[in-house]
Image 1 (cartoon, one colour):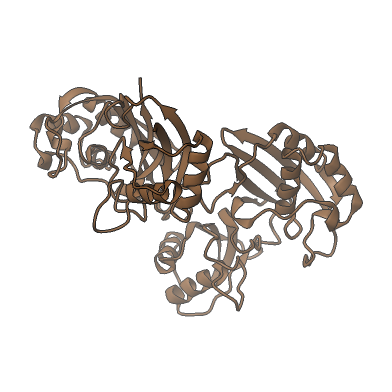
Image 2: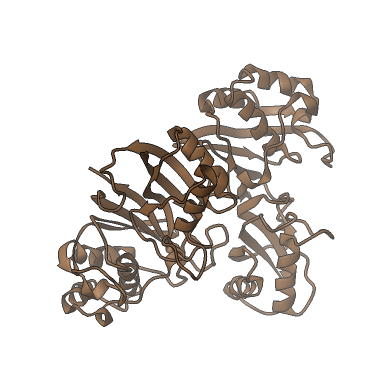
Length: 246
Length: 246
């Protein structure tokens, strides 16, 4: 038996999310079906982050145990073959130590949230960006973002259904950058609460619109109440870019 | 009557191309249907470049004459409203002189051709890039590209069905740049022959694969025979980026 680390890219649009569920196709189930077709046995795939329905990945990480004698290149190519036509791609497959766990070994998760900020709706980037027609002040959003950096109780930025035991998280990076018509949020932490990045994005947009002052973000954080923060931004602007390991 | 210059972004995937045709939905017909819904009359839209089926645009230009009294912002917003759910977006609408003609006034056309050069198939960029799994030598492709610059008889790089009177064209720019896993061709000329950019891309890929030497591109050009050049690259890697006017 060999444990493989898989790096994955996927378009979250057609899926109910990473996790296997009864109500529709998931990324995990598609990978497990490809593994069954390749190996002839049921193999469980464990992911580093349970991305929600509609959330994309450019660098999700998962692991699985393969008994069949094969090579890493064959694992990658065979899975990509069997995954078609699902928009999931195995970028790399690497043999790892049996101690490696995609979720529990991870030390950092990097997300990007993309906002298309222009009057005209997206055509080429449709399904990849949150379209906001009214002009946003990216500098004000960046100022609000700085108040979330560090170790805090993120209860205000946590979905009601979040299963994490503690609301304490350390936000290591949160930058807001305007690139022409696009505003990009880059977010990094060891781990996140459920919907944390999307609630941060929805809250910072309130600042960008001028409805909130930058310091109101700090007040929302201090309130430790989900109702104090902004709305949850739509999933299709979010992409899991990278998962870091020691 | 006011003539409007429209700048357009579209995903070419679902269309038979720019031009109105009997065999399926075209970008031109979608725009004309939106104009009919907005103005209540049949209005013809003229485009700067007749992009083929599957070819995208980030900066196509078209013009149309509107009798109805309105404003440029209303033209843009109303067309975008009526275009839904087609993946076509009117980026700008600008009143122009009656002498302006999207096609005949244009002095330059800028295209980008994107190749995803990695073992794993595209998931997020599917339908936007030509996927080539075997490694390509971008420096050799750039060297081959330089032989096409300038004023030449481009008969070898012209589709059989091309309707241009002369095969003489001046290629003002043709660069090949590797950006990580992606190879990008930037191409600029006053005008192009039918399929010229896609045949150039298909030919340079032969060089990138090592099947041709860079100087073979010059020999293919000199042959003035379509069979001397490489294959026509697939449409979905191509995007009309910009059309220049005096």
